[in-house]
Amino acid sequence: MERDTRAVPSGTALVLVLHAHLPWSLRRGAWPHGSDWVGEAVCEAYLPLAATLDSLARDGVPVKWTLGITPVLAAQLTVPDAPAVLRAYTAQRLAAAAALRDDATRSSAERTLGAWWHAHYTQCVARLDALDWDVTRAFAAHVEAGRVELMGSAATHAVLPLLATDESVRLQLALGRLAHARTFGAAPRGVWLPECAYRPRGWWQPAPWAPSPRVRDGIDRFVREAGFAWTIVDAHLP
Image (tube, rainbow, N blue to C red; front, side, top):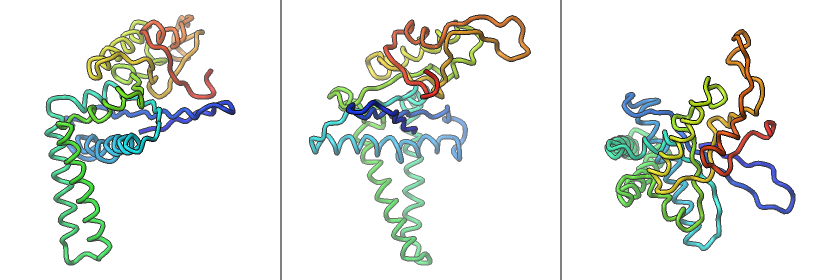
């Protein structure tokens, strides 16, 4: 999870943009960069984030967040075997926490830590049960209430300025937008450019030694063509 807070002119509101992405990790083993990575992100980032939104809503605190969920991440949270992956992860964590909590050879501090983690993962399971083990549902009510605006991204998180053809850039953005609409029920207005990578219009060649440099349109043109209204770039790029 990346937080992007840009400097804004005096007298304007802070813009809070949260970006959520994981490389494809399912069916690649469990640890460290397999299914455990997905489970950890769900229980340590996405569910706590949704719980914070729930708490703010109950307390009547007005919030306006922008949250980017990439198509790659959304797919991992909604594929048919996602619930089984999350059940296995939380079951393993609950067992490990209980073992630490109940181990008489451990210090009092270690047993207290085990109890804390056991309560944490018990709460995660309860939240996932309420969501029918579909994490994307955790943000649905907040989107509908206007507290959260969801951003889309490129289909496979490709670094767009490095793609060799304009057709590849167009396809990444078009399919990313369609995938977002299929998952969340509406096309996104904003797009998170993978790695915030932006290239303005100008001369381009794939490598200094490559022949025939040519003028290519900037990424902003492809963003507009795909139907997005806005994006975010690093401060030194505009």
